[in-house]
Image (cartoon, rainbow, N blue to C red):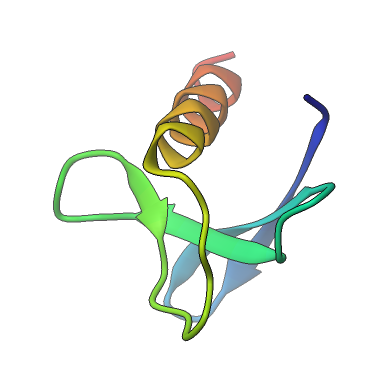
Length: 64
């Protein structure tokens, strides 16, 4: 599955725009859970497993 992840530096920190075919665009940011999570967006329905996978990808890219 192809995911396009675009980093965006905002005044409140780094956010990531995530585009995956077949899912609505959503944004992720570092959360209190100690990983990247979806920023509250109304009507965004993405499987939790997909959110975890994208979080892992972002973390791996940041460690490079």
